[in-house]
Image 1: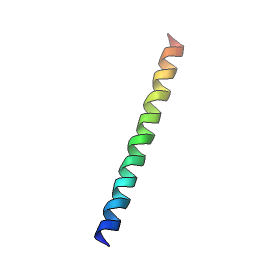
Image 2: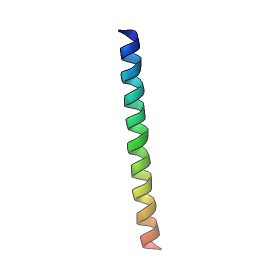
Image 3: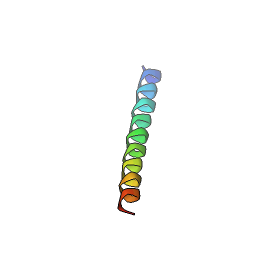
Image 4: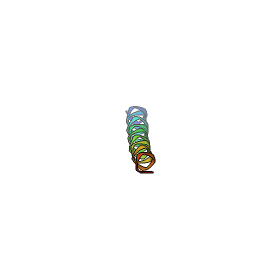
Length: 35
């Protein structure tokens, strides 16, 4: 049970990192277009 929770936590943090990276790349693209 604890191992499952740990895996879920890992997946969640990975998804959060991935989505934040996606947001950063979108912001970078917007900045490049502005320039």
